[in-house]
Image (cartoon, rainbow, N blue to C red; front, side, top):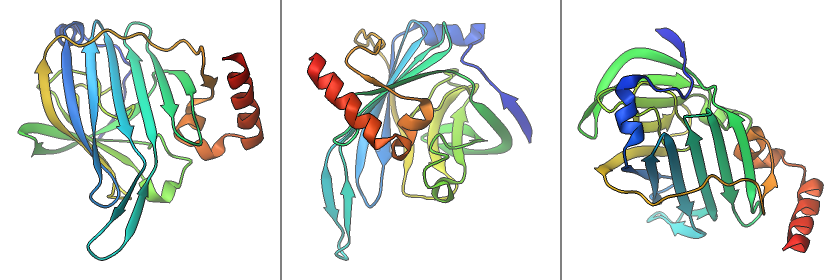
Length: 228
């Protein structure tokens, strides 16, 4: 195995993809049989990944109930300045925003397989939810395709020499994200949020909202409401 630290800088062979207009969809499978669709839009060296999950109660044939809570999350990857911006809007944690420099570390293995019609290679990294039930996630596993030279993927994961075709975890098997479609098409223009009307938190806090000080968050919600 070889250890590799990759920043969000693409080599010349990748620039054609990054500069173009590409729309990618992922099937996002959660607990039980619940699933949503995540979209990755690419235009002019900027990536935007969006996933929206609604409040939902799922009852299995065996009678077990699984609760899914509202979670609107968006990630913006800027390859020019190597910054990641994430926003999150849920019932208990609305209007959150975090921004950080891209510095994700990957361990690329020699293991390969085929997923969604692509030959993919296995890479491992530390879960972004590392402080939130770490025994559940253990390690993040990404299967990437070098034939698609796009250094992006779902859920804020990026930095591999190929598109992430599938994302899963070594521990819990309930969450995984698999490529569905890739289209070359004009994508709608977007702007990276600048923090206006948002509650600014850290990368660790937006991925692990239980670490946000509840008293502080309550005050921020009040201030935000008063300013609107």
